[in-house]
Amino acid sequence: GRGDKRAELEQAADRKVNMRALEGAGFDHLYGIAPVLNALTANTRDFADPGKALADRMDMIDEETIVEEEKQQARKPEAQFAPWLFLQEDSAGGSKRSHSKVMAARTIERLATDMGIPVARVDKGVLNALSGMRPHQGFILRCGSLQFPSIDEQGLPNPAVAATSAPNLWLALDEIVDPQNLGALLRSAYFLGGDGGQQQHARIGVIVTSRNSSPPTPIVSAASAGALELMMCSRQHDNDNADANSSSSSPLVYSTGNMSRLLNTAKEEGWRVLGAAAESPNDINDEHQQQCFDLQNISGNTPTILVLGSEGSGLRRLVAKACTDFVRIPGGVTTGTAAGVDSLNVSVTGGILLWHLAQNQNTNDVST
Image 1 (tube, one colour):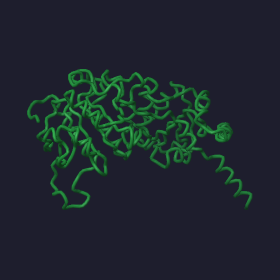
Image 2 (cartoon, one colour):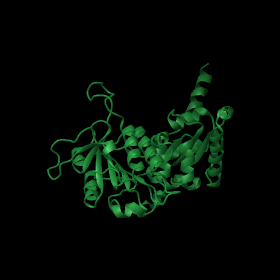
Image 3 (tube, helix red, strand yellow):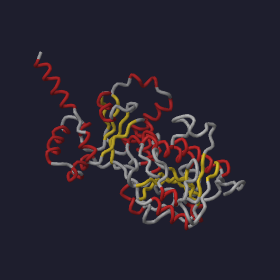
Image 4 (cartoon, helix red, strand yellow):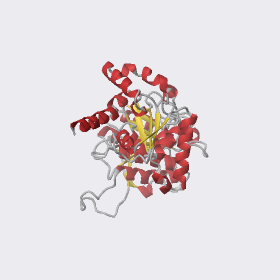
């Protein structure tokens, strides 16, 4: 009857989590085994003492919300303004996981416990709500959000330094707005460039625009399979001291407020700046006749910045003007003859170009 319906509505309201308030307070909800495991392993994010988390964020939340959320916190962990690891309580699907995923799941819970992060087992509906109905695989980590540190003050390292102690291949992303594309590009950069573990230094760094670009959201982390977490290996509160010229302990992803100026400065210091384009833009550079080379005619033995433009409009004029030359991937389809399939997605383009440049960093066969 009406009483039962009212009870159901009250129960639903009691279970509701104020996601907007949580996000406004600086929390992210990472979902999926790889992002959660890599976030805990890298220990890059804010995992503040739960008892202090709400107090530290009081100035970010309005008073009415604070009162309501304090009531909710007494009822359920998913409403608390504090780091939590949420696991799906129904473990019936656990037997269907591969051995590697089972081991990863055990490692996640162990790391959270060792780091003092409380663990809560909740039903699938709670995980669906926290992840926005995205594929969480039974794992969600509430933690502090990330921000890309700025590279503008220190700039890129000198190419001579990059050859020995810093990335000598950089991926510059000019207004990439799709989080899926950004995540896929970060995954490629990390996979192809390494993390500096067995090498002297990681080989690929990434620069994004601080405006009109996807921020480092949980969607980006998931699309990168957690590579975002590993590339932001320097803790956020230490970012004021982060330096692109230092070793692999520094982040591998930075932002810039002026991409064209950064590229022009890098070019003056000796970096080769290659823009990805199907052809050389017309009449944009009076000082240097820019050429567009097929990928197979580009060597990787020169310290290089590879520049990719936005999904819709490509490289902006001033950014294209800052390039020394351009590179294209030859295809088997004639441009203009097949709508929508006469070019590659930006993340696929980036992966192919990075592979070629990274694999040929130590060769001297062909140069431009």
